[in-house]
Image: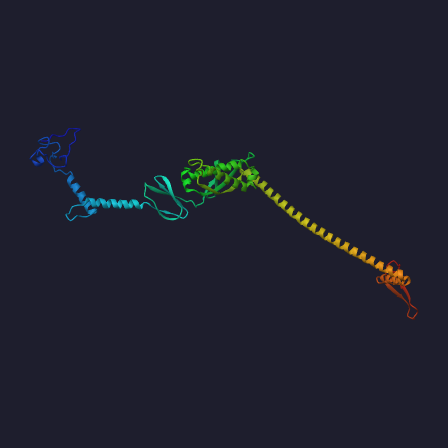
Length: 398
């Protein structure tokens, strides 16, 4: 009778080293002696029951049947062809592996082709492309034609812009503090440099933008920054950012640049840090606007007056020139007439004197009032002449 196992002992299954039941040295089948003779050890069957452990030979046979049914059916002899199954499996895996080399480039993208980690080609045209599957080659696609935007000094919110003080607060050249919100618009110029020169391009662009703006504001007076100097600040910041990004080194002095192109810098607001100061500066700005408007009105009035005066002066000058010419011509005519009369007088004094008398009287009488005095009996008419209003007659007689 088998002894009960002691504590700490493990009963092993009653099968030999290769899964065969019974020992090679016994003649009693399941009861035969194994390596130890009569029982126990590797070949001993548990008492009082049937062995239920799976047979390794049966398991291998079932797996072989499933593999044969899946990868090649049965040969005429009914046996599995392992070579054909392996060949088909390897072919399928090879096709799947080669298919991973296809890639697509969108219109706004460029694709870098890397061979064992080194850039060997750049695909700039949109469409389907192919490279050797990984790990031999791989592709990195970058949106080189897309304009990207970075906001500095604020974050967009549902009610407008939310201020970020540690980014927006800056010191001006005249020791004043301002809050600046601005945006940078940029794109990828060189895909290879963009991918491999700087680790975090977007964070780098943002830091460079903030640093450049602080430097430009540090050279600008607060009044210029808040009024007419904004365009210059935007242009100077853009140029300084591009200069800094272009000086990033890749490997040596001849290989510079971060692959980033700055399109523009847009100042959204430049304000003092407190609301009270903001109101005061707004009042100053309104006053400056009013001053500018009044200066423009005064300049317009000045131009109108000057134009009018110049026109009047030109008219007076022309009138004077005309009067001068007329006076000269009249004087010349009178002189000519006098010379003619004098020549006639020199030849015939009596006739000339009478003619001059008649002409003079005609000139006088044509502008004078004439009164005829007489009666109804046919008395001789006595002519009486009034020269002007100095004759002393009553007003009604005139």
